[in-house]
Length: 333
Image (cartoon, rainbow, N blue to C red):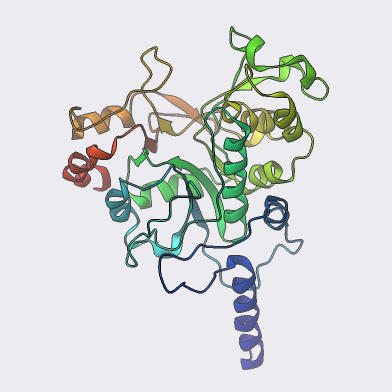
């Protein structure tokens, strides 16, 4: 390759990088945002753009996009810092927090400067889907991101970075991980509304966990959807609720069932309550507990039966961080 062609490649890559990230200069005080695109329509439009030339004009390492949907701080950040250390070229981070929360992350933190322009989110409200789409659109601006992982401030990784990276980008390259089941039970009459048909019929109503892992194909579908999103926005208010347990699940089953593992990779303990178990300082957080979370079930992933069914777990309270750090050798060993 000639010098002129090499220089052209570098210039092109630099131009693409500048377009993709929308990084804004650091403010004198506080913390910069990753981008300042406040108009959702513009952000979704930009994120849904798909290159038509398959070959990339720059060197590209496939990355995992970690998307944190939070109320405020990231109390488990020290654990995640350990998880990410040494793998900087293989991940991206995006944080959607309450717009009034402005406490800066330390400048030497991997989370510094990773917040996006955010808006208020209410539980069991369309604003939850809006926040998820906002995170997805921001992550799709980076063409190197291949898998998109939705997390909360109460989530932890159950393995080291390399294990999770290989699982998602080498062993299961073309799969999304969205747990889905038909919802014809008692919740269906309260959540599906007759006004949703058309286009959404009652037999198409699906349910699953909010915490999902998506590939680019499904993620772009979510951003560019103008058929089902208005149905949720206009007709899914009380007693229809928890749109985040239905919207992505319905889209993946209608559009890409063959690309979905039909399994959630986030371990959660339910004991018949409305909310999952919270693990805090008084919980017996131990190496044995992590092993039980990892291998609680057998599942079928990509046509193969495996006992490696969970890569993440929740729900961990802020005061659990000390115990989690004490067993970090088990988590990341």
